[in-house]
Length: 318
Image (cartoon, rainbow, N blue to C red; front, top):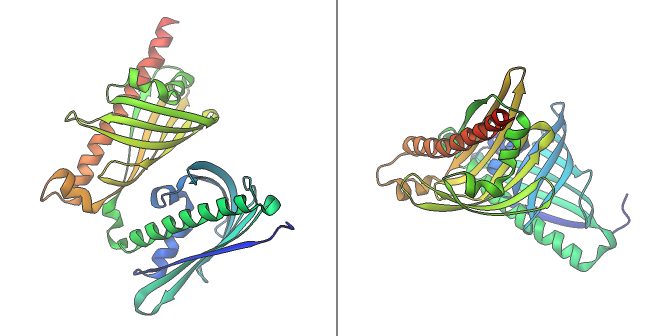
């Protein structure tokens, strides 16, 4: 047990949605990167229906941080307690509880509690953690409120799809092409600019200009987490095009006995109020879904095909 002083924070929000809906959004932590702005990626390592262990990546004060959390879900009480088992410095401990309370009229009071200690209890470190906790908690609660209050239309607002290409070449070369995102402006016609930093191996922070079908360009910013031994690269767009509230995805390289299947998966939350502004008066959510599916699929398929060419050309040369 840490001997440092325990600091406590509390954040809350009123949600015009049933408590069961709010709790359901909280309980599925794997979906948090799509639903919560600070979260980049969540890997569920263990889960028995009540207790779970999660590896999490998120932004904090502009930095990408990673830790392992243990959570206990109590669906009857509608609480979720958590403890970071391996917190990053300056934290020594970080614990908390989500509390979902049903209110009269079918509304919900949602509270997020944190308690933490900091090594040496230095004022500047405590202030850093408090600022990150306040910024992230405020963003998480606001976005969860926004999603929960549209829960009857979430199926229309959330779009999940994938594209795949078969490759007759080594999985390592396919992964190498997808990993070397800094080279994409020279390799991909739809990428006109790329800024890339990788201060932590396997964690890439990037800003990219993409050329659209009509010749215009938009800028996105993303965080990518790379798993070379598993042949996976997951990402979260931290700055999205106007039509999307959130966009996460994954590149998967899947070898078998006869070759490789490379898959691009996308998950999107549409920004409903931007649909007519971007696509024109009278465009509905169904039209926006078709547009996003076509635009993202076109670019990801182009990338997959060039990865295929890269791997198969190397085999031909050899």
